[in-house]
Image (cartoon, rainbow, N blue to C red):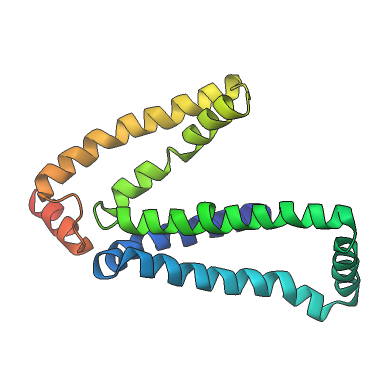
Length: 183
């Protein structure tokens, strides 16, 4: 089941990146990010609260949680929870949605996807710097694979871009047409 969910998430994210190419060029990035966050908040809230509405055992769990907040330790925990929720809502979700919408006004989905593949490299680097985590042999192999894949992909993208005369063509058929004419 978990593998299916990962594949489904990858599919949805890929569709999001490809469709964002069109909408980012036609709309304000801030409006796109805001609408995405509102929809995300709605689905997340429903996902979190629906089990509590349907299941009696979940109602007890939520009730215990809310009762625990009334203590002094609970208030301290609530501050931490609020800080985490704000960080994830503002920085990890809203800011990144805006940055992606803004960035995809300037680059194609192919370039955006290549940039997104470097995310594990940045995560490992920041964890190494800020959390003093070590990058093991498997991590080094993973970094090598990602960098190798990028090294393999980028020259083809550059050649394709020179042939298309535009790195951010919003018409996917124009890329197909220009490639079919060169054969």
